[in-house]
Image (cartoon, rainbow, N blue to C red):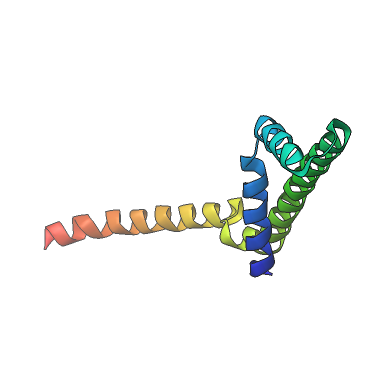
Length: 105
C-alpha cells in the first residue's frame, strides 16, 4: 500500500510540476519533432493535461484513504487531549500540596 501511495504521490508531483504553459511548449516541440499536425498536437496536449488531472485526483484519493485508515490514529483527538489536560491539572494539584509539606520539614 505504501509503495502504491509513494508512486502515486511522486507521479502526482511530477505532473503537477508541469504547468499548462510548460505542457504546451513541450507538446509544440514534440509535435514539431514528430511532425504532428496542429490538431494532433492539441490532442496530445489534451491527453497530457487529462492525465495530470487524473493523477491529481488519484493522489488526493490515496492520501484521503491513508488518512482515514491510519492517519486518525496518528492525530490525537479532542478526547485524548482533554484527558491529558485533566491528568496534568491533577498532577499540578498534587505537586502543589506536596511542595508546602516538603518546605515545612
